[in-house]
Length: 299
Image (tube, rainbow, N blue to C red; front, side, top):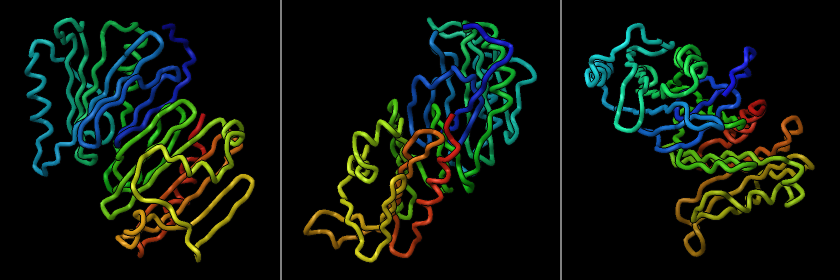
């Protein structure tokens, strides 16, 4: 992979942390959930590095001790002056670490008390030297973590989403031209964010409001429009309020309010869709905020 002097950059933001990438780099594999998982970044030549996350959960967790114990597994490879991104209380790394049949690697660890997360970034030392150096000099020092009590930015490929504090990713569908994330919050709230593109092609297949009829996530409840709710249908926007109900004859069991909003964004040639389920006493404002969070998140 040839690395030009003028490098175009992007960033990825997933599960509470973000990092810069060269624009031609992409996620190759995503695994895991909120508490533990990994994401592999690469280009057309193959994998470049892997980022693993872990949320210990224990209030008395000792991040420094955890990192030191991992470094001791390869004591003769410990390197000095590990990059320390802002927000990380403990960091460490080893270089030249070698496992069976996998070649030498550089492994960096960081623990953030504020983010309540451990990151482990594993870089193959077999990648092109310029790419390896860019990861060491640009990716590691610029890793950012989000606090649990603040809004999180999610960015994958060219799709960007902003989600209020407390929502946990439950499921995702990342297809070319159709990207969807499904979140839940303990108070029986469910938030689905979706971007479909190109919008012109999508609208030639079905009307804007019809895109809610083929949800990417399976569910038992069905949408029923509220007689006294808001309904607005325009050429490039659609809003409707309703209820999510268990099928007849059990529709009376724990009904949930539901707000659906769809907007055609001409600047990015995408359809932004959001569906927010919430309790009787809550507000559907989060649906409007979520749509605004998708604007400007495309490249």
